Amino acid sequence: MIGRAYSASFDNVTVSAVQDLFSLKAATGMAFVVTQIEIGCIGIVALQELRIRLRRSATITQGSGGSTPTPNPMLKADVASVTTVHANDTTQTTTTLTTLNAGAWQLANGSYLWVPVNERNAPIIVPADGFIVSLDTAPSSGTVMSGCIYFAELG
Image 1 (tube, helix red, strand yellow):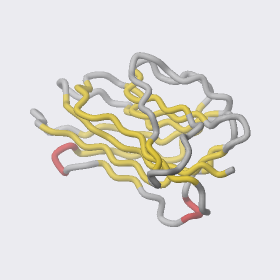
Image 2 (cartoon, one colour):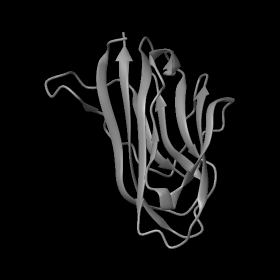
Image 3 (tube, rainbow, N blue to C red):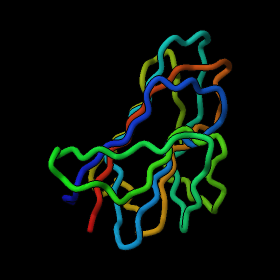
Image 4 (cartoon, rainbow, N blue to C red):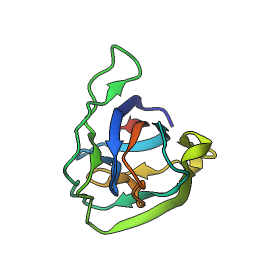
């Protein structure tokens, strides 16, 4: 499954509410596959475990209140991505969502890392649909987080 590879990230954002850490919307006529997700934090003040869900949405309406990071091509000379990326939306995606993975992140143990077991387990998002990394538990106090999502456009 080869495609044009990209990454999108947020850096040193204070997170204190439930939110979509990432939401990606496929362009019309262009699918994408999610290949890796990394979320980390610094300066935790309390031991806590946060719920994270990886979700898919048909005809996504992305949330708001965060940022719109520009995806960076992994090959420097590659073309710009046509996938729309949002990060840290505190008004979350509200369309019908399908949970693909539900897990927990123990902040004291370091970073949250999700990588599909193999190519067959990587979520493929069809044109106009979306993929969401949902933080479903708010940290007990503002926690500084950084994150990166890797994906490849298939088209």
